[in-house]
Length: 143
Image (cartoon, rainbow, N blue to C red; front, side):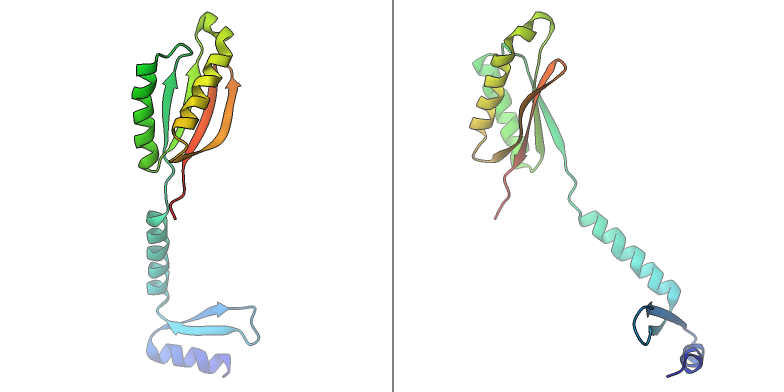
């Protein structure tokens, strides 16, 4: 079918001739309402974006001298965050002279990771960033 015939058919129907695949031999065209087509494309794109998962990062802060009760209290919050599907950024903040207790901070974070091993995976091991020792946990993938 020639281009002129296709244009005539589209004009008779009161619609537009839209080129779908220009690189194909011969090019693929379709007779449709172009404005409606664009509207539906935008609608599909918006629907896809709304279904996309948004990553939420929750933070839990410890001190290097955090007591057992406080640790357990924050552990329960961390467990809840991971069960909700949020990523967890846990860190030990060193104030003033407490910076000499880096190993305590690392032990605390590794203990947290061990307690949450059943529902979370360690994304990055504890590492120092300025006055903070940071570790990331992500929820385990559900099968």
